[in-house]
Image (cartoon, rainbow, N blue to C red; front, side):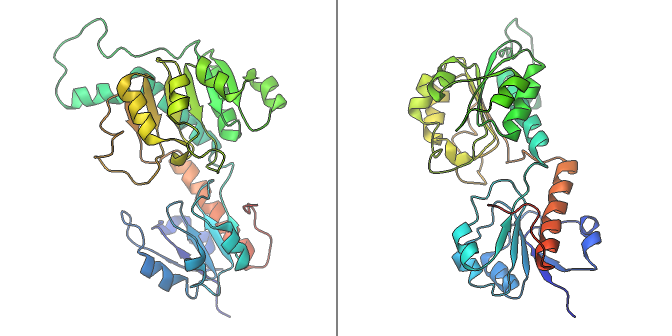
Length: 321
């Protein structure tokens, strides 16, 4: 009896897949720095039982119509903007993601971006690398403190809670906005629920960790940035499309806000010519929120465990509801 066929859209070292090779026939795209071409992907899914995808892979009706045997799409991410869930349902394909295993690592990066943007770390690092460090002055690359400031978290899920836990170590005043109040989180994290406008107006640091939906699309727009303090630091580790990038560029250029730390963008990947990249007060990262060896290993295993479960007739471990 032939083994179920799995296609992986990115190159993954065989070490991480060894435990699954007896049960599954695994194929993958072999180029590390290049996305699988659509034509190749369509050819590969033609006889595949499972697809191991990443956030930049579009899973839609066009692809699913080329995959008559497909039973499961395992997305190596928490977000699933790239997946047409209605099309999956129509084709009887289970879609899964990788929640929880990356929450702490992503919270680490969110707090790191806060600190980097506040203390002008990348700007100062570039100064040294460009051999510009010739002297010292009292306010040389002076940033702003985090200790004791007010942090506004938009989206109090697991990652938001993780950021709040880290902020407590800096004696920050924590407030949050969420679709609904989370009184247990308020008690555990000493956080205060406020409405969105109040959070914008009173926070020294604003971190967004909301999913991208019709409701959150471009929620950080010109009006939102105008309400923020001119000393505010804005951090986005959620989805690029929750921010109006043109409005953010304007806010940073004109001093409406102090600085920004960004791990996600409206369209990815971005190039060196992107307007935000050229701004000294913007820290731009290539969507690496979960990029630790430990966490990415857990994400790979969860994807493969979901695949193994579904193709063997069991329930998915983390189905997207």
